[in-house]
Structures are given as C-alpha cells and as structure tokens.
Amino acid sequence: MNNSVKAILIENTADELRDVFLRCDAAVLERAREVRVRQGLPLAVTGDAGEFFLGAKGDRHRRPEGAFRPEAGHIAAMLSKLCNHSLYAYDAEIKNGHITIAGGHRIGLSGRVTVEDGRIKTIKHISGLSIRIARQVLGAADAVFPMIAGDFVRNTIIVSPPGCGKTTLLRDVVRRLSLAGHNIAVVDERSEIGGCHLGAAQNDLGPRTDVLDAAPKAAGMMLALRALSPQVIAVDEIGGSKDAEAIENMAGCGVAVICTLHGRSIADLRRRPALAPLIENKIFERYVFLTDKPAPGSICGVYDENLEVMRHDN
Amino acid sequence: MIIRILGGILVCAACALLGLYMSHRGTLRARRLAEFRQTLVMLKSEIEFAAYPLPQAFANIAQRAEGDFADFYQELSRKLADKEMGLAEAWEAGLAGLEDNHFSREDIQAMGGLGSALGSIDSAVQIKAIDMAVAAIDDILPHLTVQNAKDGKMYRRLGLLGGALITVVLL
Picture 1 (tube, rainbow over the protein chains, first blue to last red):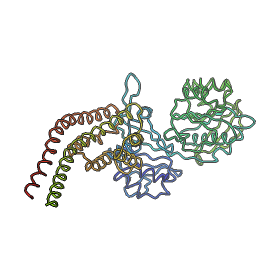
Picture 2: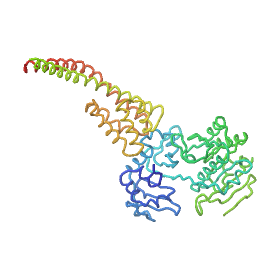
Picture 3: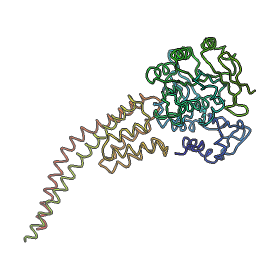
Picture 4: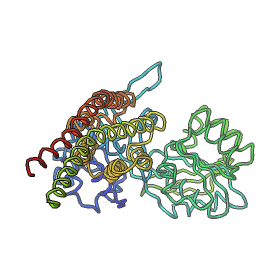
C-alpha cells in the first residue's frame, strides 16, 4: 500500500477532484500538513511554506482566484471513500466532528449539526473536509527526552496551539520510553497517536506499548490503570475536569502521565479552571511549549514543576 | 435390431435426464435464493450489532458463506478496501457474476437496489433496505416452491414421454 499523501488523496477522491490531485506534483503534496476541501470554495493546502491553492490542472496558486472549487458530489464521494463506504461505522466519531482514517490522518468535518436534548447527535450535509496529515517523526523527542526521563519518568504536559507538533512529539516520547523499558498505555481517543486501524497501531510506538484506541480519555486512563498495569500513561489533548481528575488519580497511583494540551503559555493553562489545581499542586513536573516557527515541533520553552525555566529558545 | 433398441434406450434415458435437469433447475434457484437470504441476514448482524465497516463485514461473511457467495463477498470486500470502485457499482458487478448461476433476472433485480442503500450514515436505513431485500426473497420463495412442484412434475413427465415418442418415431 502506498502511503504517500498524493496516493491517499487520489485513493479517496473521485472525478474532477481526483484529477486535480493526479495532476499535482507529488513533492508539493508530500510537504502538505493540511488539505481543506470545502464546497464551492478554493481547494487549499497548507504546507511548511504556508498556504496555497490548487487549480483544476493541479497547478499551485498563491491567490484563491484560479483555484479549483469542489462541488457537493466531490465531497460526498470523498467522505464515502474515506469511511470505506461505511459512514454508519464512524457514527460516534462524526458526532465528535472528525474521523480518523488508516495511518492516523484526521479528517475534520463541517456541515449541519443536528442536536438532540442539547447534545450533538450527528453532522449532516457535510460540506467541508479538513484533512490533517499525520506523520511520525522519529527523533522528534530527542531534545526534550533527557528532561522528561532521567532516573524516573516525570509527569509532563506538552503545550502548543494546533498544528505545532504536540502529537508528533508525544508519539516519539512514547516510543522512546517504550524502548527504554517502560510499559506504556496510550489512551488514544482520536486515534492520532497510534494511527490505529481495526485496533492495531500503525505507527511505531515501541515494543512495550498498549493502545486503548478510541477510548474516552478519563475513562480510558482508569481502565488502563486497572487492566494494563502501566508505568506511564500517554494521552492527547486533555482539557476537561474529568481529564484533570483522572490525571491526579494517576499521579497518586505512581503512574507517570505524559499529555498534551492546546495553549500558548503558562497563563493560558492557569486560565483553565480544571487545570489550575494540577499546576498549583505541582502534578506536572515538566511543561514543554512548542511553536511552528521556524517549523512545527520547534521547542520554545521547557519549565519544571516550579515553573522555572529549564530551556528557553524564543 | 439390437442397435435400434439400444439407441432407443439411450434416447429415452437422455430425454428423461433432460427432464430431471429441467425440473431440478427451479429447485436449485430456490436453494440459492435461500442461501443468499442467509448471507443478507449475516450482513444485517454485521452492521446492526458489530458496526463493522463494509469491507470488513463482507470479508467476515465470505468466511462463513459457501461456494460462489464466498467469492462474491470476498471480491466485494477487496474492491472496496482497494477503493477500486464505488459500493453500488461493485455490488451490481458482483450480482451480474451470479446471474449465470441459477439466479433469474427477477432475483438480480430484487437484490440490485441494495448496493445503493448500503453505507449511509444511518444504520437504520440500511437495516431497512436489507429487510426489504430479505422480504423480496421471502416473497419469491413460496411461489417458487409451488411452481417448482408443478413444473418439476411436468418436466420429468415430458422428458420420459418425449423420449418414448422420439423412440417410437425413430423405430
């Protein structure tokens, strides 16, 4: 199976939209981090060098005027293919606004949200797909690993705005810890860490890693603690009070937690009511801040449990 | 004379066998429909209870089905997994391959619409579509059984009498 970005896009599209990707230079698509397919709007690709648009002949445009504009049929066909012609099997994920396909690539969905009893029931008339390309970068954790895992593994939180490489770093930390001899449980609610397909991780997470794919974070952490006897638990994109409570429980049980969070600064973390107690109680022993400048995955600061700077790059 | 008698016996036997084959054809069609109905019930379970994606569901059915139905579902699974063609297209192509195998055009038409109903976000819609295909087969089967009983008797008699008539004419 060809796992190049171009192959994935061609495989999952039809008609004129497929032709656009067929004609596009593979090297251009290979550097893509995100592809946005919106009904009636310019086909946009975000890469390391910023955003550009694709024309009907696969040509690159800096401005949206000459770009190809996908129609409803293109999006419906693409969604059907992305879901293996089985949208019903992705019902729970669609409720959460995204699906994850083989390889861990995340497809964000936009359209008409149907609500029942105040809860999102599903998304209908899907009119936009945002394809985030997952990449495993071996060695992404080289710079921070010695600060996280010395004599013991420290509770660590990786913080950055979206698209700065949090999950990539977390994935490599997991792999390195696993290689170093730790039993790790990954609670992978969005299937982005392991890129699981039918329960089996497709990314290299090391030889001592168990993955609870699609498990809700808080419940998954408790389940992992009871069932898998991990030394370390890794979890992506925490935020709610239940997550914070579960992390506190893990720390109290002697299990190290490595997690990620959307944010830019310590101040952002303090503003989140659920997380403030974790900071005050010094549950986290390492805070790693990432930026996308000059490239995603760049470390802009590492702090210890007292919020004292261990490393500051920007 | 002996050769004539032998020839006559052979003609009689051939016609009787032809009559038997013709009477058996209807029975085979009914059996095949019942087998296909069973695979549709399996498909319903795969969608309703296991919520497997269709390529996986078809592969699971292929393991439990027999003969060319196993091949039908295996091929469907492969085509969808390889994203070679759309579901409706793959389903119709698969059914067309089954047409030579004791299914009538009427049977193929009864099951043909299912391909375009599968795969939607609402599993209830798919369950209903499968139920309708199963009901269509259930409608065909009793008529087919009555028809087979009538036609079978007729074909068998026709074979024997036809053979006897040809033998008398030839002798």
